[in-house]
Length: 444
Ligand code: GDP
Ligand code: IMO
Ligand code: MG
Image (spheres, rainbow, N blue to C red):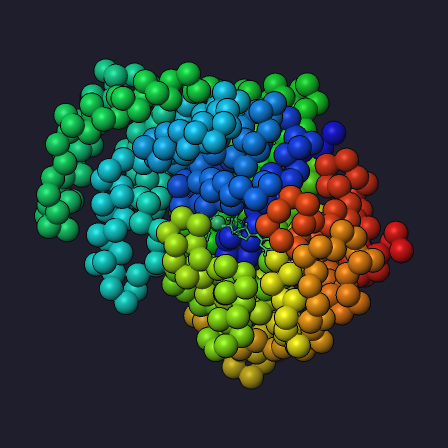
């Protein structure tokens, strides 16, 4: 039995959806704890692609309970569309549950997100435009609408009448946008409430009861460590806490129930939206990684910025999340390269720095210090064990494990379920992964 947190160790899109789906076959419950429809998690099964925004990536297993936890923000229109799309593909959503204390994204959140980005001009964050920041801002300001409110038509009328009047002043006076008609919005949201009512639960209690029954619970992170509101590259971050601690807060469980934390990291780095990115590649190699890795956003379709693996942010992710082990994804994307660089440290104002600087302006000034490794220039997409990997690919993995000082438990070599080497099963296996932090495959 193990309760496992899966989190993104970089700037999002690390392949959390694929890894969560893979581990879900051993999980009884899968929980999303934070974020909203800014997330885009891709799961590929038998050639069919599923793009999930709010629904946990365990949904393809009908016996696995999937919970959208209280720390998430829910756009009911997008959620219902996602549920309908799954049903059309014969995937049941009877195993889906929604926390009654999650906050609800409203039309004014989306409008304000987009209008404020435009107003910021050169200082824009490059958000997904899905209303995430404004929904979390209302939660902090204590003017948010929760799923509980949505389920109670009298309370929804009262709260939305007041809130829409207030938001209309902002829309009209600050952003020159047309006001919202409160009756239309209330009517629309009451329809969503009717659709979602059967799925609404007290999620913290449900998860606690699963803990008491010694079920395997998987907590699926959204976004990534460097997008964390408190510990990421502020202000170029999202408005929630994608780090491991956020999974406890957003699920309403205590940290003592967590057995393991897995960090998912690509074998290189990508970032969508604005903000500093020391190892970003602007030339041909960046294009090559983007094309071979199909690096276009799952949610917005935006081209992802690509760069070399950055072990400084990797070590930071190990520290901030207390990572036990890593899942390294998209190793196959490096298959054609003759040489591969890895950032081992930064240089700031002529000084070498091994740690992530929490000062944003220092981070923007960081110059990567690279070590170059030989590529393998062979197809790895069919490899099923570490022994089948070309020696240079295994050396590359060992080098990453050494630099990050944590073992690698999973290596992913393609989007499909079977394109994966499970070095050690993070749910059933021993605490220590077989490809050790010293890089030596213990099994060999
Ligand atoms: P998430 O947001 O962390 O779940 O990641 P995304 O789904 O947004 O982006 C990861 C993309 O890479 C998806 O298109 C996956 O299907 C794909 N992918 C995942 N693992 C691998 C891998 O090992 N190799 C390749 N080539 N693609 C992968
Ligand atoms: P998954 O779960 C990558 C980025 C946006 C922007 C910043 C703030 O698929 O890894 P927001 O709309 O959240 O206010 O945007 O965060 N961002 C992501 N980047 N993957 C994601 O999710 C992201 N969710 C938000 O591009 O830079
Ligand atoms: Mg994604």
